[in-house]
Image 1 (cartoon, rainbow, N blue to C red):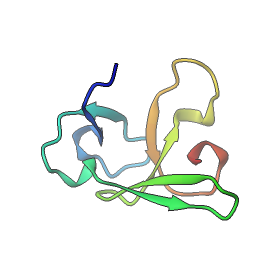
Image 2: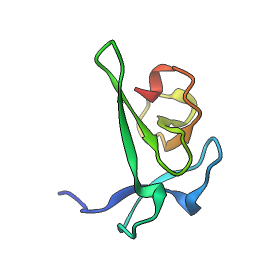
Image 3: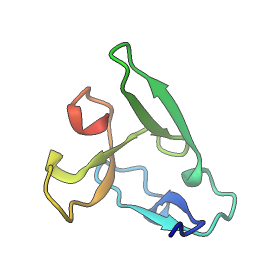
Image 4: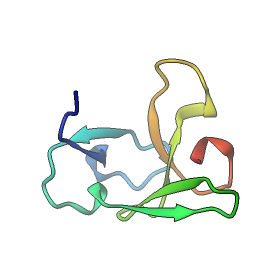
Length: 79
């Protein structure tokens, strides 16, 4: 079931590692994301408030990993 909520960055953080959470849409810039298409067919999501991309904490592939924002350094967990 869909939540109807948006992805936002907790406390509008602009820091690497800022936690990405679902939240009611309230019009703040941390709820806005831009899709960036890579030449290999993958895409990244860039946060409009921080300029950082959505990633997985520590680059892990395991269950329960937290979604965070991070500087766009080209690593696989940003795609």
